Length: 162
Image 1 (cartoon, rainbow, N blue to C red):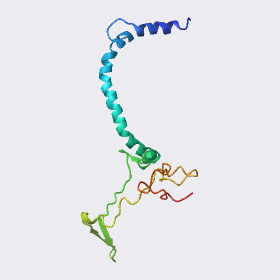
Image 2 (cartoon, helix red, strand yellow):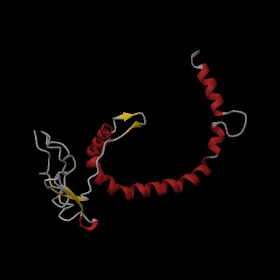
Image 3 (spheres, helix red, strand yellow):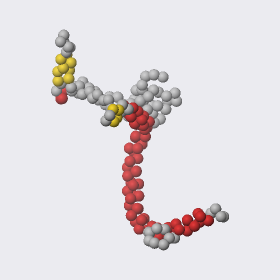
Image 4 (cartoon, rainbow, N blue to C red):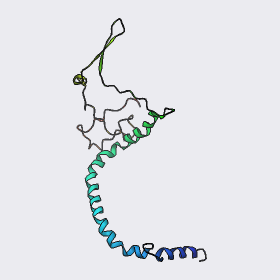
C-alpha cells in the first residue's frame, strides 16, 4: 500500500488538475468534437486501404526480393573518399558500334532511334523469389499454389545451382 501512494497521487493529478486543457476530465469533454473531425478521416482511410488491397496482394510475394535488393544495394556504395560515399556505376546505352581495324578500332555513333533495334523486352517473367536458387521445400519461386499462371510468371526461370 505504501508503494502505491506515489502512483495514486500522480494518477490524481492526471485525472483532475487546475488549469485548462491539461487533464483527463477535460479531454473526455472534448471527445465529441474529436469524433466529428476524426470520423471522416477514418472513413477515407478505410476506403484507401480497401483500394490498395489488390496492389498489396500483388506486391507481397516480391517482399523478399525487394528487401534483399535494399539490403545489398548499400554494398555498392561502400567505397568512400574525402567527399563521402560514392557508387561505382557504369551505364550502358549502346551508343556506339565498334569496328576493329589494324589501327586499334573505330567507334561509330549509333543514332538514338536505332539503339534498341534487336532488343526484346518483357520476355522474361520471373516468379517472386526467383532471384535465388530453388529451395528444398519448393517455397521459392513462389507461384501462389498455382494461382500465378503462365501469363503472370514462369516458375522454370530460376538461377542455376543447388
